Image (cartoon, rainbow over all chains, first blue to last red; front, side, top):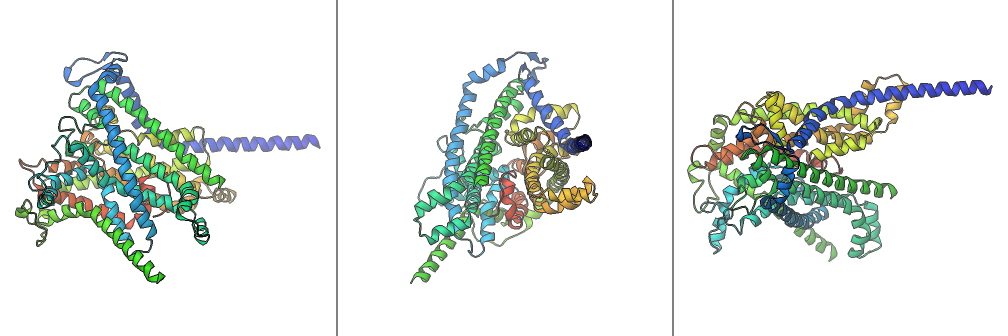
Length: 314
Length: 279
């Protein structure tokens, strides 16, 4: 009797084992196309880049690549121009993201408080359009508007009694102007994230608080913030990552100038690769940026998981 | 007393919201206005705020050598690449969601990180790779590139949506003898339709807007709209702002329409599928 039960059990186990085996096959079969794309168009270029970063290879010199070990990395660390464009990028990122977050929260709260306003969808469309316009177009549009002679911005400035200003070639103004344009582009994104963050607060808790006549400050600290903080954090992170990548905008608006006042790291990198053709050297810089991106992704997913856990325990 | 106070507050709030929206849209409105102005009045000082609109510039821009071709190229590579990406991503995210093969989390992590690297970092290896494979200025090369470009976002968003479909559907299907293909495409797919729409619309926008790789890996046969915008400024000796504004207008109007019609997907779209919810 016990023997036959044991037999039966082992039979079931075998069956489920073969089912698991079959499932494993299916799962890899389904993954295969994505893995092929990933291997050819991502892993391969990454290793290529890693390999190149150890070589001295300049396209214009017609010399074969020569192995140089870590020299490129050491040069990069020592290069003051590059390290200053890295720190400039972080300054840009921090100031721009702070402005966008503050403005975005304010505007987001306005729209959140005003769910039944007339034409809300159209208003939001107008408001959201700047962030889906490609930076190339944004840069061109602002170049036209900021033009010192016929630009519309200068027209208003002079009619208000200010001096005619060339925002993009003035070494004091170019960087702040870049931040203003970036803020115009991305404040809608932070407002969108604010709306989503506020939308993630359970309605029932808000209603209960309203019935209890909880003061607004307590409402924020005890109900809104614990729920909303995650999406807001994700928004800030995504925005930081994106600001760190900024290139098209500076490329067209100022091309890093005047001097190097708006030279951000992504643009420096592009120039090393395609103006001076120092492939080995710029690969070393790329590897550095790759590591930053991986670190930022890890932080991003950490917050994402924290949110999941908080939701599950709630 | 109270209700009328409330009403006044609501009206003030509505006006504030509308004003904000209009202020943010003004620069784009100015470009559209510039495109609609008669060519000889574009650089007038003071700028003309009232004028009889003309479509001449738009028609001129469209008939200028490559403009139309740029739009056609963009449509070709973005639609094919995004369709391919969503197809393979659907298979992969079904696998991630249902079978959780070893390394699922790590692969999802790597996929997302590829979208966080500055584009300039990857241009060199791709440039050389495309030279060796002789894929420069070819649709096959660009479509392959943009498919990979769209996969991370598609996998993230579709996995989220498939996770939301109970695996009871799959089990019931299996009990009734349905094949995996049938389960995936007839039982699960219809339930993640909004995920598919979001992934489709936003990947199209991302690919549509991508400049650097199109510029470096493409050529006259494959350049898309962003390159068209970029080169519009160098057309001829002096910058022809009517032309730039016209191409900008032709580029921006479809985007504004997309935002209007697909507004509820905007959030999931701009967070690479990591955050869900409606606005």
